[in-house]
Length: 415
Image (cartoon, rainbow, N blue to C red; front, side, top):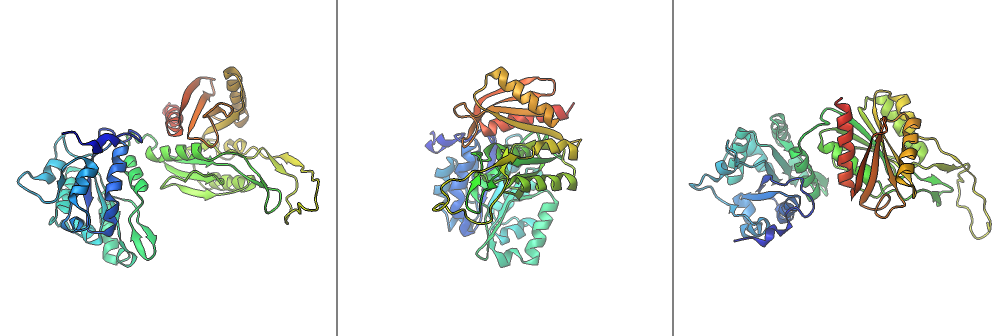
């Protein structure tokens, strides 16, 4: 019989296509999020199976989890040796075991090798088989701060177990958000990790310039393209820092984020990062202001008495041109937004900018084309290198565009 529950598989992406994930549930009230978590994993392509401890079954019905996943739920171990079937040393085993939520009790049992529930027995089997394990703790903050709990977590991390969260809120170590758990699952299973060991710096979002404390000059950049690149770099194993203007896109989990507003603040942050450490790759995706007011007023200009007002602007520094001066060995990806140019004109304008910035690649997009550029989830770009080779990425989700940009970076770095 076909489960309609599985109609959602792959509707948000195929990052987990063909991957078998075992979701292990323990006795925390955070288990209420388990159906949502299971289905979000499925939306990214995963096949999800569920193991439940007795305590978890008292909070969430196994029937609900069977509906959520479209697969039978393991609530006890039988002669079918379900833990070995899922996590033994054989080709049909799971690709990842996810313990979410994980109580202090379960974490302690796993660390001690105690196998007295379907969950702990499965995890022990997975550890012996070399299957990746991701744990999302959930408990009161005082329990999370218990020295033995801290020691157990350190012990498990030392043998390769991954942890995500928790969020310390209202005196509780709350389980990580569903989208964060899903993102870490994708990162663990992402292959190849072709930026592992690399440090990547991304500038993203707009800058704004103050006319007075209330009024500003800015642009329509959302930061979505830069955030997509930062997240893709994290998935490929890089250590990522984002210098982020006031965009609307949320920064990726696990990135170091330096918040800025003005061009001057972004400049200072850029200098600080490049002088303070080596970056293998710099992606200058921020939409930095081209002009800034010659004067910024320290008070709100009175609109009721000031009937006319002349605003004088001066050229802002081109921050991308500082990168190679400060860090000559960094691989630099520049960005150039143009407006309603021919393809040839677009490429020429991009190449001119590449030369000016001494960049290794430049990504050019025409923001005058529908669906391309600011405030949207899609983009159409032309990637141009120093030899004027051009890769056209047709209108696609910005996540896909980010993959193509970093594919080019990796290919160039491998030469």
